[in-house]
Length: 338
Image (cartoon, rainbow, N blue to C red; front, side):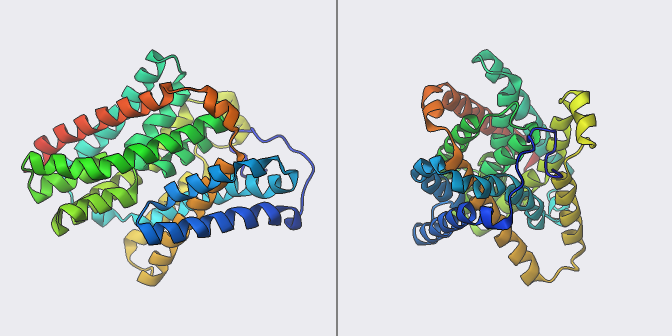
């Protein structure tokens, strides 16, 4: 029960590793298939894992898969978040300069607040607004999974999480195509274009792809900006945990989830440069694989009938928050980047 952050998992019959194998074998196969499609067609790995998981959703009725699917969508996710810290170093963040760093923090915080306000306006609770805001403001599907894990299943349902994953993937794919065109139309320099693309596109791979499609220099800056947003994942999760009732935080025995601490530790060690480059690349690859596996498991477990009943309002919310993020980032680009 150590991974039960806020007491949401009801203890049931203990299962051994053999009971986990069928479900784990299924999601690993789904992740490998997603990796093949991602390499073959250049599509985001998490998007391919999501689509394959949804295609396999009918298998969720098989009780033999439940233990492995639960382990993949919960425990593997947390370790994937920890390894995301291997993508970030403090030196990369410092290279941006103070004005740019302040702009990124302001944009992320403002996007989160706007998402909560828009969610309430559309009839949702603040928890769903935090989920959408975190996904848009930080790093797409990875942040959505991390926020949902922190807020727990008491506040974020499997159907809500899956719909956000679908919406975020769609919006990020559209942004990868449209935002470089808008930057060209505005006559942005490489520096401004890199800041805009790294600061406004949700998914890491798509932000970097858009940046390098603009120019090599824009791609370098987009990488640093995007990884700075990724680095904000840990403090954002820590702040979100403070919104939970004190009784739940006390029951969990900690205010900050262990995977948030792990993220900071890995990023700090990576910043020292003592980790060999092959190990860093291996950690990054492992993080992507674990997160893709968690996405596939989440999609397979999702209650699709409930998902269909949610209608278009959640997608409208994601779209509005995405537009707000773009406007805020464009404004920050003009102010902070010369």
